Length: 281
Picture (cartoon, rainbow, N blue to C red):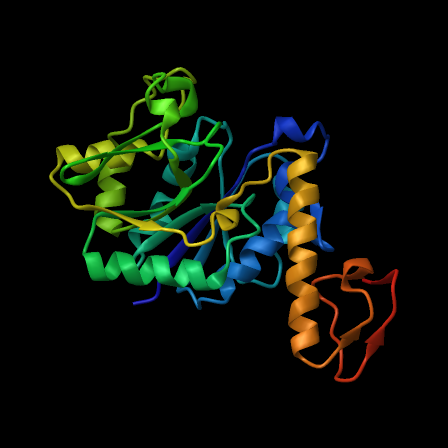
């Protein structure tokens, strides 16, 4: 059974301080959403559903070539509300449903594939990807009890003690289809933001005695979201390093890899030599 992937790309991204919606900001020569779709395509999903919102037509155009389906979130009322817009597509899914955001370009296909495998093995209603980070500010904290994960509490709703927790929610989930459809109708917006939080499905699962599993991401960098221009700059450096390493392993010589920029859609042959300050786009 191939997974259905739901990519949330509706938000404007106010912290980017831009007239351009966040999903369209370029990273290594590709819009953010396209970076994520490249990762998604590598695990051979059954179908891809992109949730649109701000600048929907432009985001749709940026997604060309991936065979994605599109749904529109006219009002941005939270991640739970966004996924609800994809309910019809989810209902037709044959396998598990993976939900992730368009602003997580550092996630690798290997981690995504491992998450799906862990979910299937655990026979869980929901499996979330978590990470241990030094600075957990802004992340939803993972609350654990004797039976395992009991809830996710968002930054604005967390107590002083909960804010000290280092295990955080990545915002990347794998769901059993029927549980997800049921839980989406049970999410309430009784929180500081007045939004429908997808992480509330964890508490709903506990109430329904549905198994909640978690997979710890080996490299916390992968779950980093791009929320500001500074985040974008850090991600650009990491993607550039990955790209340059890939090409060097494929037989390309780079005299100073730190000063070579190769965008994502560029193809190189063996024995190409790239000198410092070369930019290929």
